[in-house]
Length: 272
Ligand code: MN
Ligand code: MN
Image 1 (cartoon, rainbow, N blue to C red):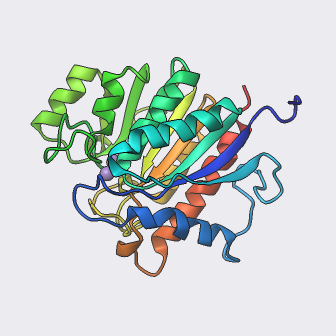
Image 2 (cartoon, helix red, strand yellow):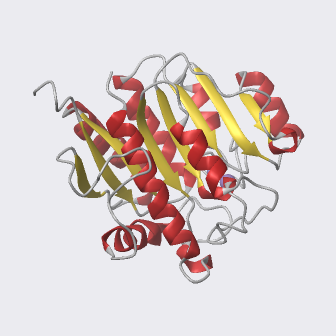
């Protein structure tokens, strides 16, 4: 390992949507996003000046194919453990949002004092949803119970109910509701950041390809700026809940590919 190659960043697909509480489809996302990334519709350059097509540190680790749905946590966690132990950081493509919990279980073993920046229309803090504690509505309740981060900051939230408000108070989550947007001051982090990006945090005008279209969300530009402005190393990320079955003329697949580029570029620049 040389000074100039401190770690690699790998794209990891998790085509798994068995924990979707409403509509299926996010399992199709990794394949669709990779198709856009390989197409001639965009180049390899990110806005921060990284050329992904020339980077020796940007790779594709393939997919985690879940053989047994009930074992999804172990199967995802083990693959992430393997990659993180090889000094590879992960940009994971879901899949529904349930996949973030096992990814973060793995990250918790390799990174202490992690801050999670969670962009979403929903706080995903349900203790249990429709009888499923591992639903896509629950991952951050499990993350907080396990103490996998020292700080959880949520942006884009616009669907809170009483139970979720109680969970926010119980777990001391910094949940920044969309009704107070824009932020009074920029986000400032003290520890390395993991980004969990639910595509439905973005307004459906920009991202129609989601199972839960919730108007009143962030613009594409606002999300990209939030990513660029992260003031600590960005050491991992997931992009979840893109549902190709709901997309309109590839708008959301192009958006997801753009976000892959900007997140990967930011991660590659995050040398500690
Ligand atoms: Mn959501
Ligand atoms: Mn979510």
